[in-house]
Length: 165
Image (cartoon, rainbow, N blue to C red):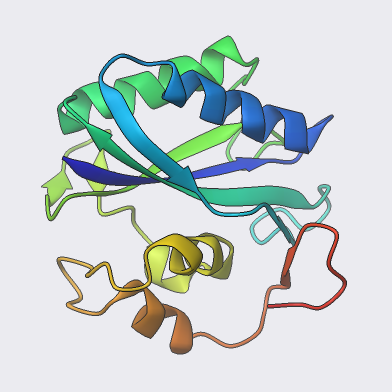
């Protein structure tokens, strides 16, 4: 199954945390064909007093079920030191399951496609780099079309690039 993940960090060596998460995914026996976007520096949205995030998007092929992939993401977060103390707290690493093929899941602890993806430039800019034509199964718009509907806020820029996307 083709799946797409978002990875982010705003604590410590943000680049190292993102790359460690990618390494954890790559080393899993049920994940293959991993590709990822470049890292983007993104202005915090829901917690403006925090440090800026680094974000990227990842595409994988997996034999894992949607539930197992979600659990793997939570386990990687935990292994890399994420502590869930309060909503929108700073984090070493955050892994979000964005799309799992064309699956639509809505349970008390898992929603796929990821809720609010269509409002989040920090997710859509990196995702559009690697998967612009992926179709949102509920909104029936591609990632590129979703991104084109958003304005230029918040700031999302390639790491080491002073121009904003």
